[in-house]
Length: 270
Length: 270
Image (cartoon, rainbow over all chains, first blue to last red):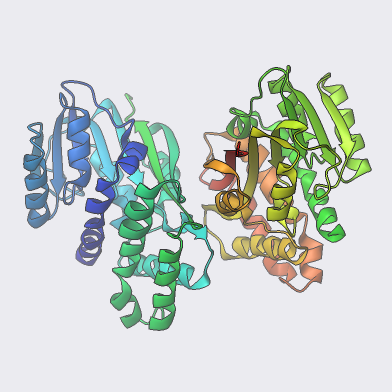
């Protein structure tokens, strides 16, 4: 699994940028609120992009944010400290062996994590074991197959497909967004409700043109250029044409669509 | 243009089914409301699926619904009569030569029409000429490239692509949804705002499993089977496997996504 994690963490750096677009934070997190006194486990916090948003939105809830990398935890800790948020504890932990007693938490939050795992279902089941019955489980994932744009361009789709193939090769699934509902149901989570959060970008939304098309999505695709070419998944000319075509969608007559999926359900009271 | 119209009208029959799903009507039309006394032109009403919804939602507005086919107008008239809606007039008209004086209408409504036209831009410009300055222009279009699903399936995408190719061959654009913003802006419409309306279907939404996945989208794809195979765009085995895969997404662990785009803008007051 090491390889999958590394790949994931590289990508996760993009969340810093994603985090900067207020419209995106609103889209994903306007309903990410936890009651005063509740204990929330954030599984796979990475560099802490979501941690800051969560802890700020629910100042009277207590967050425990875990990750398998000391290095990333250090970055997350720094971000949370800089934001002056006192309600977060960090802990080194493997999602598949969480170092917590049963029912240690009231709520579970998992964002941009399952896409990197070979066994997302086992992760959800294992994490549920430290949750109290009746607690909520929130899962947020993107889906690179939800990206389409104007002008449409075959090379751009090929470059995105290379990213999807690389992520699959390292055990992940960049198309996991559409699977959030069946995964949560199969994990035994009750009353699952999934809502798509579509990022729609045209010239009337300049914050997203810059913050999402250019600095988040296209930058993420560009980030796998050498790896994808080296792996023989795509030739350099096609990849570069694809990246240019993605930037082209940020022009005044361009349009870009991408969808995140947010699922919420409950741990059964049995 | 004759051919494009014929193809369009065949497809437009699907709107009867689409019209039956209350959740879809709500998604597309919860904000399709016109003030008392206002004069609304519905351009390209087809069999009247949207007409009934519009006239019911705005009983004190006065609708003029036009189409180029007497046969379809007769069907639309029957539907509106059966619904007991007195606030609709029907008129035979070519969208490119509307038989109305300048400023005859306060608002313009165009739904599932531009996708079938060789010159959607000229249609929007021409239709604007019969609108009073300051009136609203509403455009709603689907985008077949916005369809993705779980389980993912290459044959299903190939079958959808055949439908897109057929529509292109007859002068239309089945991917026009993503172009609604640039088209409206280029047509000189002011303050254009486009909102995507994503149909997200999983087993928790049985109305849409039946009403959208099966009876609307997959039925529409199935409808072009013989034409697509005859045109050599796809072989029968692939097409049939694709249709089976689309029905497969309606199983309890399946997920289906499709997005409509609704644009609203104003005719400049100059």
